[in-house]
Amino acid sequence: MSKRDRLFIILSYLTIYVVWGSTYFAIKHAVETIPPYYVIGFRFTTGGLILLLLSYLTGRIKSLPTLREIGSALFLGVFLLVIGNGLITVAEQEVDSYLASLTVAATPIFVAFFDRVLIGKRISLLRVAAIAIGLAGVALLLYDGHSLSSSLTPEILMVVGGVASWAFATSLGHRLHVYKDSMVNSSMQMIFVGIIGLIASSFLYPPLRQVLPGISGNSGLGLAYLILFGSLAYAAYNYLIAHEPAARAISYSLVNPVIALLLGLLLGNESPAPLLAAGLPLILIGVFLMLYGEASLERIKRALER
Image: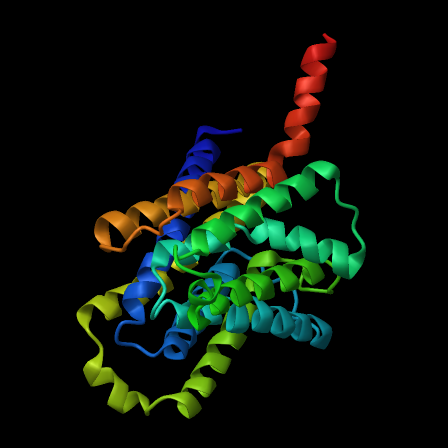
């Protein structure tokens, strides 16, 4: 591997660690004065066009997508971004950004559940334990210290629903026929979702000409950050998928929650959940065991056999 490739890999890891960990903080600021599905619309339409342009400039578009590939991109875009990311964006009008991010960190656990229920994929005892630990952490994190009914607010349920929708599409996505280049496929998803978001906004909110005067500089910066740096992070992730082992590339799911937590508590003046100190370690332990537990056990076994 050349020095140039190593440098790109290091920069790509830094990008997905920091940027993806900070997107929930940016969403929180964006929805302060911009209606959520306008955020979805502008974020993904513009971001998708940026990715499509990058795909064209780097020669990744080898052929036009088929109708089946377009249908798959639309299906995944709806469940991943319109419902998944969309519900979380709506919820962040009330839910702290770090709380949303920590709940999203449990996505691999939800994916394992849907893999078992939808496609009958076997789950090892270690992964069952990881699911139990991770979900226990989410439950502790979301508990407000008073009662179950007061903890499960509509906004919290939106976050959980968004995570479930993302995991559902991730699980089924392996069985769909998609465009062979992941960046091109992602750009199609984002453009479709952006258009859907803008159409939905025209029914849900006042016309854009009435919304624009009320947009604060803070919200504008948040949206610009999501569009520009969010797209850059996705391009960096695609680069890592092509050049790094998947198990290493997905390590962002362990780092992002910590970044989001620090931003929310230190810069966003967000209040820590009553059982944060107990819930956070359980979520991270559950996700670690889900992603690396079996490989770690194999290494330990080999070391003991020497």
